[in-house]
Image (cartoon, rainbow, N blue to C red; front, top):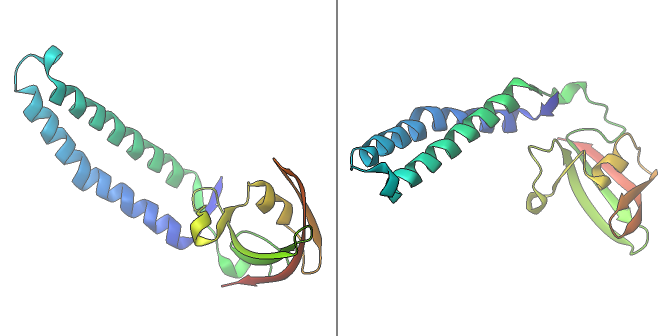
Length: 155
């Protein structure tokens, strides 16, 4: 079971709808056109169309599984005083005295450039359940990071 924000759930549902109703019909049409061009064994266009069809079907099935096994999380039901899914956490790396701020999200929403880390990442997992002032220890490939939680917000 995965928990998603309403926004991400809607984005995945929209992508799935687009793939099923727009992209896949075009892929099928392209496959039919290239199939009609003669000998399939030497038809590079046909092989490419088949690969594209397989890729599109694979993505559709993946997104269907994600939605089937996901639930939209209710932000009102989340604790405000401790780190949880959808929390925006500001913390200090005690070794370098560097401050960072990330939002804790599901793996399907992770985007480092947007400041979103997975709750299953080493840092995300170490922060989960902690309160302001707590020190979390995250096991990362370069060693152990000691992180002091400075603030927690839920939007």
